[in-house]
Image (cartoon, rainbow, N blue to C red; front, side, top):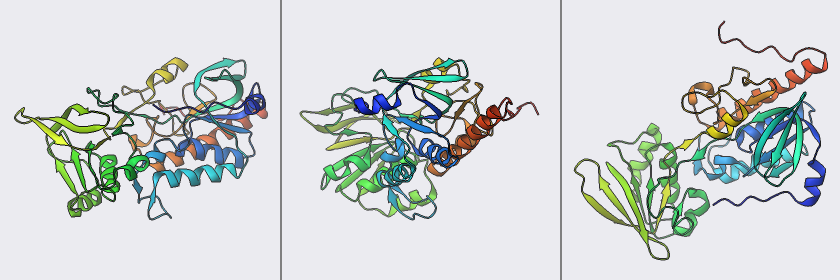
Length: 337
């Protein structure tokens, strides 16, 4: 389970009750880019996040970010953070539990009990990784079960591991793990992977990686650590055992639906926050960006999330400029036109 570092007393004293132009909720590529752009617009901005980098910090090899041919997720997240900190933007490791309207302002309540205020809010919470929901998953979390290949891959040097999933994230994790482990199995419930052609080529060319199709995990077994997986063949129903020292779960993610609904935000049928082209939501002054939204056809890429963060910050700036000039903020786009 992720540990949250609460603000120190000094930090809590500095931010408590302070009114920021922009409060960014989330520290992934969308949130950090939004903070960077807001700071460059000379707006006062603070970032509240449970983890710096979001899912970017848990990604394996990233080879499609322009200007950086190859980099692991945690290192790219560090570069984002360092860039934002050049503008003296405070990044608070905490969890937002509620956002309330107080006249023209928003009151943001944190788990630590600290409250701060914002003239605008940019929600960039990202998504949560899905769990398998099988026996042994939580029992062996941190003892062989992992959701972060870059974090834990070095622990499995010379060992046998499994990656559960069939998308790009699973492929990326498998390729990274193959640099440490002697054997990497990809366990996928379908009869073919859903990966980019380049990933498909790299997987086929790697002698350490083997794909087990039409398999689902029924149980994760072990003693003090993971020892094996119990698999079911989805074609014939046969039960199999696979001896491994670790299992990395990469089966997709889900949006923070409950949080969005609690704030009264409109969401689509999958729970993603509805945004207009300017990243505005149905609540004036509240913008959203990144993987938690339904923007750009649901393309979940770091560069896309960063672009949305830039748009959200620009829109917040125009909204505040309109308020300052006595207007009603920037004009909201009309889906009906």
